[in-house]
Length: 119
Image 1 (cartoon, one colour):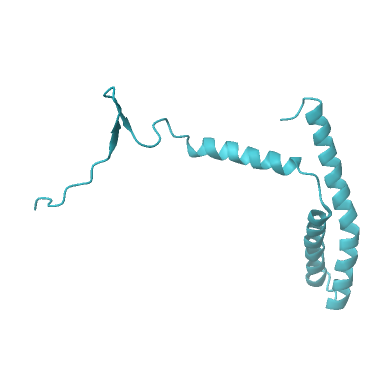
Image 2 (spheres, rainbow, N blue to C red; image 1 turned 180 degrees about the vertical axis):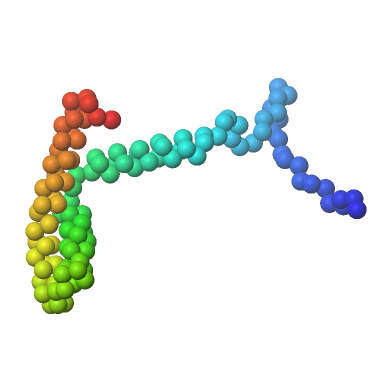
């Protein structure tokens, strides 16, 4: 059976000189790998250029200590109260260690960028 409804035609803009331009993007579209590479690099550079915070260090220390506490209960057979105390102590140990490490790498990256060796 023949098609009864006409397909919708795309609109074109005509200029006074008689040229017709298609609407929208007329150049080559960047491939997904090109878009991902630049976006990922920008996000990484932004993340590495932000100075370390105590909050980020605390989150990292808390997650590490929690994993350590669960490991203590499962593998070492610790009871729950002693595992909680051990987890709290590990947070206190990991917190300054994490912040100091982050600060060291941040300062090293900033020195490298100032010397012209970084991105």
